[in-house]
Every structure is written in C-alpha cells, then in structure tokens.
Image 1: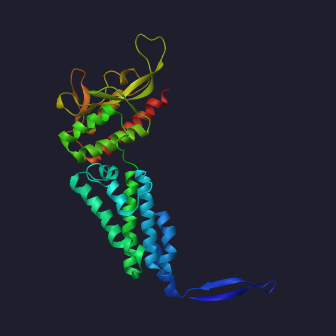
Image 2 (image 1 turned 90 degrees about the horizontal axis):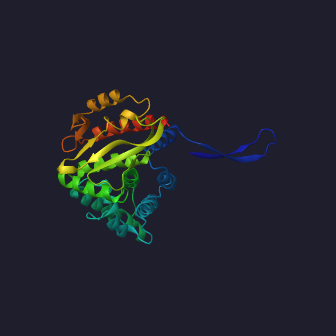
Image 3 (image 1 turned 60 degrees about the vertical axis):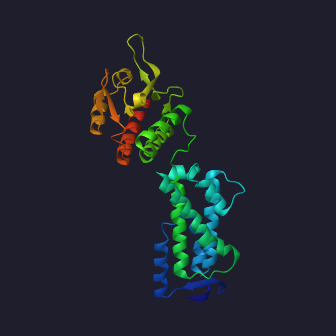
Length: 312
C-alpha cells in the first residue's frame, strides 16, 4: 500500500492523501470484509479496525467488553462483571437466560460452561497482561464472541418466565412435567408470539385458558353486529390432557363474514381433529409439538387474528 499527496488540478494546492493498494492487498481486504460480513454490527464497529491493524489482544478485549454489556442488559445485572454475570444469567436452576436458551438441564449447564469458559480463557488474560494473539487466533475468538452474541439476541424473541399471567405459568409448569422441557419451550415461544400480536390470554381461567381478540360479531339476539371479545384458541389442561383447540362451533360462527369451514380445513391439514360434544378442532400436545408445527400454527393464528381485526 502506498500513500501519496493529491494535488488539485485547478489551484495546484495539496488537498489530501491518495491511498493506493496493490492487487494482492485489495484481494486480502475483500476476503477480510467477506469473512466478517455476518458480524454483529456493534462488534464489527468496535473490532474491525483493531483486527485490520493487527491489534488482536485489544480486539479480543473489546469483543468481550461488548459481550459483558449485552449480558448485563439481558438480566439487568448492574454492577456485575465477567463470570459473575455468567453465573447469574446461566445458573442451571433459575438463571433467566438458561431457561430461555437451554431446552433441558444438560443444555443449560453447557451454556454456563461455554460463556464462563470463554471469559476465563480469552477475556481475563487480556485484561491483565499482553497475550500476543496472532491473526488466526484473534479472528476466531472474535467469531466465537459473535456466536455468543447471536445466541443472546435469540433470547430476545423468547418469553421470560414472568411474561405470562400466573395461571398460564402454572399450566406450563404442569405441561413441562408431562411432555418435557423441549416441547414446552416451543409452546412458550408460540404463546409469547401470539401475545405480541395482540392476542390476550384470560388471566383467571385454569383448566381452559382462552386467548382472545375482539371481532365484529352478530349473535341471534342482537339487532346489529357489535364488537365482541372472541376466543381465537384455547390451551387446555383438564384431566391431564394437554391440548390446543379452536372454538369453531361457537365464537367463530358469530364473527361477521368469517369463513369457518376454511379454518377447519386448514387446522385439519396441521393435524387437528374434531373432539368433544362440540367437535372442536383439537391437537394433543403430547403427540404433536414439533418446532415446525408451532411455526405453521402461528402463521395460521397470525392470519386469523388479522382477519378478526379487519371485521371491526
């Protein structure tokens, strides 16, 4: 790379530096940019220049400072640092992040060991003395920090333990005992996403918890249609049967202009089948609880919620 002074052709004054790269340097720069194109934006801002000038110890230190900041923000851990933060966030019994990101006890312990080990092995040495990281080591450590930052960001989309009313938390606790932490974690994410789009759970029901939204409805005894709180679906835990059902024989029948038969068909495609006296489309969560199922169900629920809202 060569630095030269550029002269303005009009007034013959020196205006600044021209930076001239060799072909090899241009290629190396392009490769480096491609290599780091998926970095967290703030991580890139803090570490890119340090990596480019070969300050690998400082780059690693800056990366872990950012990771520490994100951990602190995630758990409101003011005053905590390093492994103290990690132990609070990823305690396998009651750590707020371990419950969100770890689907079982083994994963939760692994998360704590991953973050704690990274701080002890890479962050702490750079805080006390020069380590002398080389290019390959420095960049790979930055990549590890990027992965851990991405995992923390994933937790933002997951519900914290106090996201739901007490009745739902109690229901989820029973469900987890029956069908496992992994399946219940997926159910939690589904319910959390439903709440985020404006579907409100009944705060007092315990056996059949309705998730509701207002829709323009026409009951037989009403002279004109009126906005009415309607159940989009219900989470049921009665008699140790853990199900989700849609009240197609009642609430949906009264929503103005709503195509109930289409909803029943679409639910059937997801594995729902009619149950009970009212033959409501129902799914057994002991049997069907995959990530793909909940993703498909949320897509359907989201569209139905929009249709209900459009009736108002």
